[in-house]
Image (cartoon, rainbow, N blue to C red; front, top):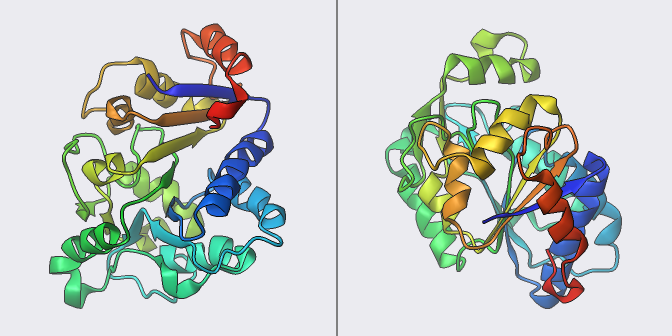
Length: 259
């Protein structure tokens, strides 16, 4: 079972996860992080800014979950630009060590295999940050995605394009295709940390944590992983049947176990 940590606010979640990332980097300066985009992981990145002061992060490596296909990497809403703006520059990471899938049309036929190879050559991802969509998707793995899937091109469903339209001028400007780490790729990380905030994520969280393991809810794949931490605020935890148990476990967890 995943460890469920219920916190008062997104800021508390960010501090908790940031502390674990700092511990990892201090122990292993070339730690490999799996980086998510969107609003959910922002509290983690914000909390890291003050915590990495004085810490050598020059060897930290990172792999983003996904990228749009056919978008200019310099477009402000490409995930390359987002990761640079929200993670690389504020934390002082080496941009040459932070990777996103290559969404260029010229090389898209083998971009997934290239990305899988790069992750393997880095020794795998030590800690993968995840959000979860209202449909239960993680990365751009929409309902129906195979649990064995690797990095590949996917067609975005209309709801996801509508959800992401807030970052573009019009919904028509949201790319139709993306390249995303597969569920099998994500499950290969050593530690998964899934964050969710707000009542709108409550059903997806409950399904992912307590529901059946099903491709209809891709987030439920986390139940197959040996080391998962789910950090949610009270609103996102509101549909969890065993919330009191999770609070009890978290309150009595030995400090030496870490996150």
